[in-house]
Image 1 (tube, rainbow over the protein chains, first blue to last red):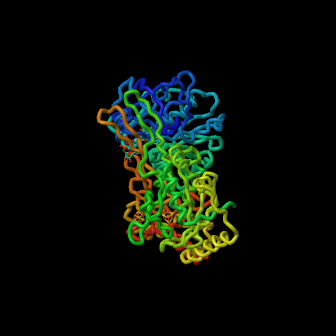
Image 2: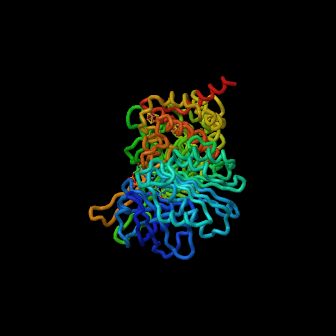
Image 3: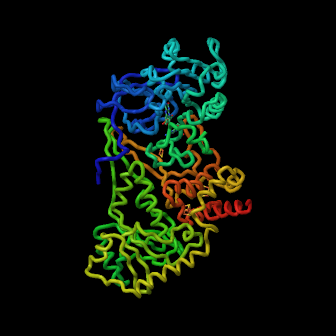
Length: 276
Length: 349
Ligand SMILES: Cc1cc2nc3c(=O)[nH]c(=O)nc-3n(C[C@H](O)[C@H](O)[C@H](O)COP(=O)(O)OP(=O)(O)OC[C@H]3O[C@@H](n4cnc5c(N)ncnc54)[C@H](O)[C@@H]3O)c2cc1C
Ligand code: SF4
Ligand code: SF4
Ligand code: FES
């Protein structure tokens, strides 16, 4: 028997361009074959299929935009699907499902200040929120961006970061855990940047995304600054298969990271033993 | 309540008629004291008095492995697959019906699961009042000894040769009448069914939770941070996942795919997975969100005792006792775990 609808059926999209960001991470630009925009919101993810290999979740790294319909993913090579994506040539096709999951409530942030704390690949989804704000710059207040990477070789979006660092309507601070010979910037884990920033805790919201070990430390720093829990937002990574709240892989206590997350307000997960 | 009385000699004729349209599965003894649902034919002896069928019935609605899409790698297109054979599960005990009712709700929630629903729509369930209780079962204290929905007919044996058959759906009633009119039950027969229910309830009361089931979420949640307790309980866990496999309310799955040799066409399928298996929550880079067996063990009891309750208002364990039997380490036992937590908390106060 055949039914005509299943949430498991991907739609096709075509690779428009690709650009290496570092040895392991590549930026991909795709266009849906339907010609329609992805209609995602900052922080959401999609399920990407390479038929014959598998399916894996990726955050949409580009902001929602109205001027064209393409969207971007930045993917780190680590296993079967990610390697297959890296092997794609321009013009090749993928399957996509979604966008799925919760997103950053941008309307709530209008008129307020914002602090981004991005560790490693966490910058990929942060980028969607940040660039949304930069595209609607006058709607938001003071913006501060903290970026931490393990070492200079693993930095991503370096050109774009250099470019936005020149702007005078936001503050960008970067650090690496372990420097190499050429590195002239800050050295130390991301929390070492906190003493260098000045923000108003009364009007600042925080978005922080990074490796699992990072969250507790960043949230501690935010609390020290006096930022209340309900203005701290995180995006959490979990193993995901269905993206539909069914397969159980992404559970955080009783929540489904694919439905209730990946973006959470810290208040909603502060009491959960499996969250951070 | 509409009910009919069906006599044993009538049943074979009915089964033969039904078998023309559906695959029928019935409980039967496969080894001494060991029962399973197997395809019916007129050689198969139905075990009307079985205590527990070891393999869960979820396999008929959420098969161990099932195709979900077919894809074409050349055209880069995909199409949905829903395979849904017409089937009758004849002789399902109420606790197992409750488990299916729960899956029905969970699969409907948020994003309806079309594969599950197609199978479920084509599945007819005839319940059967148990007459024996498995030694590991404790369903009477899990609010699972009676169901008000989820069956098309509900059969209670009221004498060696007769069944009181309660109607649960129009399609169930129609099936009962395929061979012609059947006898409407009278008051005495209804009373006999009620007594049969009370009798089995009394037997099931021998092994229970020591407190009212509705307190489980609160109790187990209080113990979430008691690592010593969970570590001790899970000390000998083999992370084999057998407790997931046999559980009628476990429904987690993995998604995999395979392509043909020419790399032109392929299929994506899902298959049962288990939260007790080591890699279940592992992500790229090797980080595992439940790295230790005790964390996985705790998750399972939290899910049965609280998380499902938070979604549905009832416990995620129906007390069948299958996991108790399945666990070679002898540690899977929701009744024991929850009772121990209750004892510990009671003594604290
Ligand atoms: C919401 C979300 C957003 C993400 N965004 C990005 C992103 O923007 N860029 C990026 O590079 N990566 C992102 N990831 C991680 C990415 O999904 C994994 O790297 C990818 O699934 C690995 O697939 P693979 O087939 O290459 O690896 P596999 O060959 O399957 O396995 C390699 C490793 O990946 C782990 N893994 C397998 N399947 C999954 C899965 N479904 N989810 C998580 N880990 C898995 C395995 O445990 C193993 O350790 C995101 C993950 C989530 C949950
Ligand atoms: S947890 Fe064990 S006793 Fe409870 S429903 Fe599952 S298999 Fe049955
Ligand atoms: S509790 Fe028992 S059945 Fe479950 S994974 Fe551990 S050893 Fe296996
Ligand atoms: S990814 Fe399957 S439940 Fe979240």
